[in-house]
Image 1 (cartoon, helix red, strand yellow):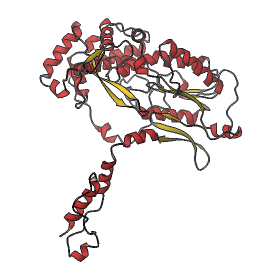
Image 2 (cartoon, helix red, strand yellow):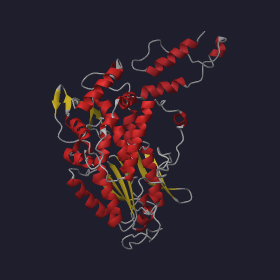
Image 3 (cartoon, one colour):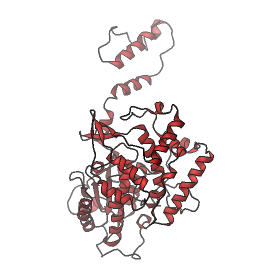
Image 4 (spheres, one colour):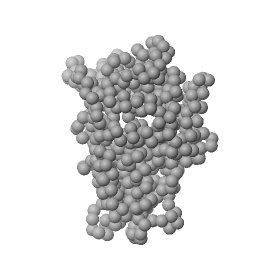
Length: 469
């Protein structure tokens, strides 16, 4: 079946659009159904319920103390004001970062996380916790708090390169976590529905489901798989602060963010100041990244879709990974060109190798076959390769497979563990009895000295020797 013909700009009333193309904050047809915090909040985040989390869902939250309840009510008022007044600038927010909020932030951190430059672990900080938190609160509110540089560490990437991570000091993590909770009350009302990365109640599976539903239910014929090159290292600090100031008027909060951005990184005992980017690994970095891309990409792409698109468009963004589906190739090419200019304006650039425009969708296979071309290309998103497939009845089916390069990387170093697990799944030894009966189950024992490096053979040998009478 061929795609719809190019018939001019799409105007409201021409035909019904999927709900993901409306102006609501979230995409009801895609995102999972979850109860909102406020009873009066519109039911705007329906998500397909996912199996496998029953025990987590049944667990109750931390018992609420009166102080925690009042803090929750305070953030609830902030959330309501952010929802009702889209242009409101919040000038008094830091008082929400009190001892109770800092305590919750401390207990939300990973216990086994590596320490920062101060060498203080989660357990160490817990000794005399209340006095430490009160001192931290006092320093934050008085301006005496000083952010420490992040400890630089590198982890391997699938393409063989090294990804730099910044491990913040424990007190920096606590303050960042507490402030993120406050800022989320504002920005979760502002972020658009096709943004899924590092947001409360959303995850990678939600983004993958959104993409699958969009491709399956709309006339998507072309897919732009876009990746921002070195995004976390390229964020412009001045643009970021300007974006934050659109909603945040509390100068103390702005100073805190500046301190974290300028704290620098320590590598081999040397502190290097940072003039660009946000340290990957810092608690507040994902939120700052989402704020930056909310203004650079999300709002711009939403307006572009309304004003310039001739056909249908779907949008899914997870952090700096972006997938845009188009009905018409002309829309895709114009969007790609305009997106390059938009990114360059804010010190960003699309990765030249990872950004591709491919023919993909329900009608891609038929259209390419008509032109004498091969099968549609595939693309990678969030660790999965997306492939145009067919059901047994010939209906379009979006297939997802784990990326082979990630599977190979993930499997390195686990061979012995897998083999031992297979050995442990063997049936138990037969009951003791006459030697003639036992010989039917156990072969003669091999030499007593195992070969070097053979963990499994040694374990099998022990099993055979221990089974003999």
